[in-house]
Length: 444
Ligand code: GDP
Image 1 (cartoon, helix red, strand yellow):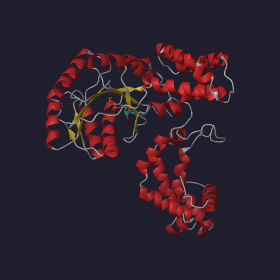
Image 2 (image 1 turned 135 degrees about the horizontal axis):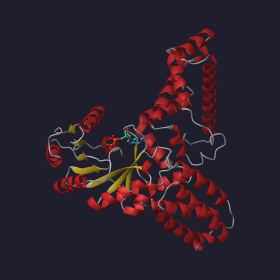
Image 3 (image 1 turned 90 degrees about the vertical axis):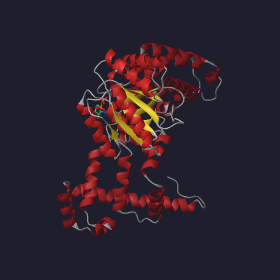
Image 4 (image 1 turned 45 degrees about the vertical axis):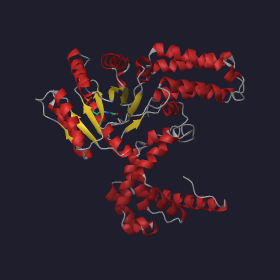
């Protein structure tokens, strides 16, 4: 998950203080010392840490905590508030121009994830906001970059405007906007050239594009894994171009990533999106409060619900409820469910969004083995339609065949059958319990 090391250390620190009926100045001192070390260890800029700790200390020793009935929890609230502030406070939404198309210019160093994010953002705008974006290939220095954007366009089934490598990027951007107007695209996302380092030629070109097309947003795409460099890059781009926001990529990586948390404090520009993987649907709108909550192990139910809503439609959810209620849930349904959960992203990330999941016995150290799921899927797919509906018809030789067909063993097949059986029993119990509570519908 994002900021894993930082999350683990902060959660351990918070655990010590949660239940305290009284919080002394000494407790606060110890807690802030540990928070400070955790942030520095995660590579958050030292000056940013210093300011943050000062504020936490002032508030934690102040009235709001000392006079509260649950001081331990109040301290944690202070830490959460301050982390939220550090990451930008309120969520910063994407601009919508009242004279379409809304123009977004993507800038950043080579390899930061600019082109991928251009595709992801277009996908996000269409999927979640019902928009129709036009992608624009302005990186004329690397033919591969144009090709990459075109490939993304094909994958997304979205148009890409390009004029090859001979044209001038400023002209390309200008003509793309004309085209977007003619074809009624409401967003134009311009993928610009990147370099390995900040250089003046590149900055001049970006400034010219900016002056000509007057974008509504200029997003700097920053690789969260590049440490303090990410902060320096953000400062340079911001000085030259006056950015409107930042997209952090590769937050799914297991490096410290904390430097990225300093970007808002240093540039005063909001983080608008976070890239959580290479796939085109792995981009999340950045909500500082939800991220702070995830880092402190309090979960992020809202993002989880949103993910579920975009991946499971209402009709499917109703059908599932009905099947669970009548205990007619089959392996086919199970397979479908697995597909939907997989669409929502890596299981580890999903678990981090469930409040308290990190504290649950068993789950705490459980490595979720996605390979297991692949086996489960293979086993189910090797069953006949009839067997999927009624596993009891399977005899020993069929189980052997299924194991062979799915590259697993008979004991793996048996285990799955047993688990499925238990799951159905549990569904029945839940349904009976719900029946007991008259008038209350089933809730997921
Ligand atoms: P550009 O040079 O800035 O246009 O970078 P690209 O879009 O070509 O991305 C560089 C590499 O980073 C590619 O291999 C991408 O798949 C990968 N990448 C981009 N965003 C993410 C992300 O959020 N997570 C991970 N794990 N990889 C990413």
